[in-house]
Amino acid sequence: MALTSQQIKTLKKQLLLQIENLPEDKKTEAKRQIESLSPQALELMLKQQEKKQENIFRSIIKGEIPSTKIEENEDAIAVLEINPLSKGHIIIIPNKPSKSSKDIPEKAFQLAKKLSEAIINKLKATSTEIQTENKFGETILNVIPVYNKQLDMNPPRIRAKKEELEEIARKLRVEKPKIELIKIKRENKTNQPLKLKRRIP
Image (cartoon, rainbow, N blue to C red; front, top):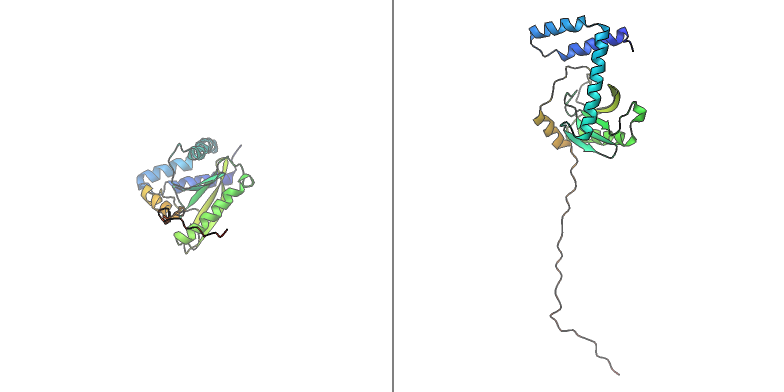
């Protein structure tokens, strides 16, 4: 499938965003290489990323690669995004690959709504956005916290530190209610003599 001029432009823009934090000399060289990429080279790179990304989602589901898990149900798993758009950004991956948003199971959406409430209550976000996203052949859900300003969908992505993700996860994970055992002491009356009512014949 040949890429359209708009797709080429968008891909190059995304690649340029990924090199924002490089040192100036390396950034200049990387920018030159990105600008010189042919449509065929971009398409090949996209296919390679697609294959790799599909494996990442499936590997997260299988537990083959580490992730910061928040919660799961029988149809989906919720993990923290390692390159978040905002603090507490969660991705929800269906257990079975979904090709489009209509293939995403209802329980994945229920999980997204539940975690949206947790983000607002525990991370003090003003609101959240639940968005479907087709990432390299699979459709996933994003639960993106919004804090007092309009959400920028194309900010430079910075990889979150493991400690930071664990701290967020600790706040968001649903605590299971503690079951308290109450011991009831029964009086032992076996030592007392048994009193029977006197019967008159």
